[in-house]
Length: 278
Image (cartoon, rainbow, N blue to C red; front, side):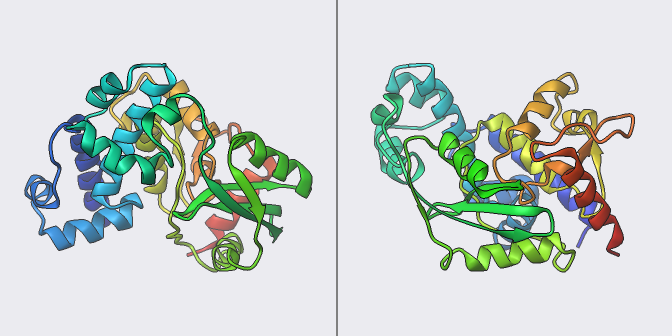
């Protein structure tokens, strides 16, 4: 088995291949041939490094393009073609699970999903974790519950939101252990709205080893867009699932911490905690 760094680079290259071939079938067999790995091995390594299966990543890229075009008020058929959906039947087959509604309804801004959330203590203050049926959709840090709850409502103004402390306890326990330095690796399902560019940035963040950091400029170079440093910073700032997608591991080129959506002191504590671990 190649070193971890080689596996990460190979999966990053495969992500770029997927992003530029969305109009192709992108079957596991085709991607395995492209990567030079067996289908089973590719599926396992891709999911471990990227956090999604190859199919999920391709779907996320298509969905990101589709949402962007629909929000621009593009006609559904035009958005479908530009996003790489081969046919209208294929688009509508997946629309219910990916958009929570038909493309036309999404284009018109209708309400979408049911979200459950809980708020609890953690080493960094108060933690709000929210999830849909498909995975974690928000993870926020703060000092008081009400601002965290208001932030969640602002992020998902049309969703049905209800508190559910019990069913989300397994997710919360894993996050709290991670923040305490007892579980370096997180493997939680996520369900967030994102463009293809955001996914490219966020998968790079997930590839940063525990206890390490990268600069915004390094991330931009790794996604083959060296001039997109500000766009990378925006993608970090709009990350809706703190810690799960570790945007706190991105710092300025001069070594400064840069900004952090949940407070620079929390970013500093996160990095200090991670550096303590072997």
